Length: 227
Image 1 (tube, rainbow, N blue to C red):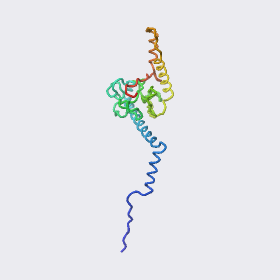
Image 2: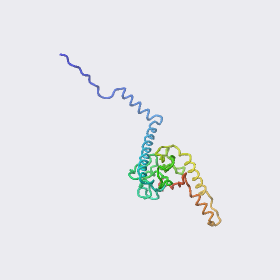
Image 3: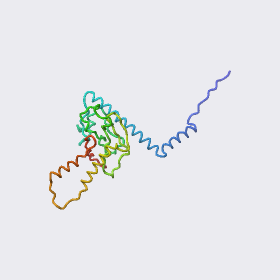
Image 4: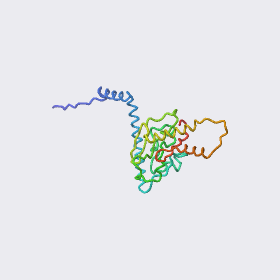
């Protein structure tokens, strides 16, 4: 009587499998590939969150208009009635935190600036390249504070992307506004008694009107340690 012989599969990993896994791990850690993969994962997560926020805004605009939110709330973003994170219905809080934002800003719960020039308008009426949300860290003026390598932006057409530098029109407006602000702070103190005049008051008001394209005022960063 012949007995059928069954081959037993050896347990454990073969030498080829071990070498393949070792080589893969080594390639990830060499040449910054590991950091690239980590940054890419954060980018995908942030972009997906912005796209979901755009879908929620589309749903709100079916029966209404875009929310009338502040560029950035003056008080706690979690409680301020003008906070965009309070005005987008059904949006989880984690969607309003950019994976590229500095940790002190993350603790505030809201890391994006809202384009308040679109308040009360219909989403379909806006030009495609109108930005709705942008990383607030893009407006950090202090050179001593490290900026993130990328910024997240959401546009009116639903396009969400992570960029290493701001779009030219926004970047130009931000630099111009910062330059005006630095000139005002650098003015030397005069020994003569200063008299307030209507002209000086008007000039200060015009310098304070630091606006982005579309009539959007530059945000005042929240008072957070490290920003």
